[in-house]
Length: 186
Image (cartoon, rainbow, N blue to C red; front, side):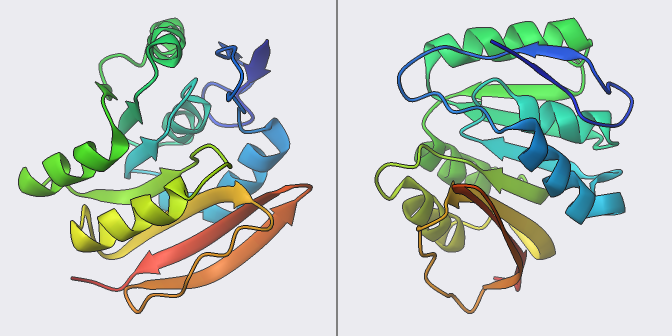
């Protein structure tokens, strides 16, 4: 399976997608909508792609002007495809790939005081990984006030409100929902 970058310097570049039972690459239509909503906020940003899979969303961010992209993925098969995609796009220099559990990575990034301007979370739709990851980020912040958190979830997923995360946009595309939050601080 291949996908294409939808905009920016790498527009139409073909990416590989990992294969497997729980793999669900972000469709081009959803990626295009995500970056249309984000607009110029991506340019010059430090972008974090959790549950990165093929890296399509983070690579799209780099294509649209992010200066540093960090990918976090725990599955070995996905990491192999992600690294191949980064090499193909010649983005290995500006990208960091972390092959580790998302929850432990949040704590490590917090301890190292590594902060991001935009965080994108797209965990498997089954279970409550998204809610747990958001709770972990609230407890161990890796973003500064005013930063943006974007979640991709199954359209029936309810994200409980929290005073530190203020949702400012919510769009549904088929069974996929994108939610955009600003981080209100520590």
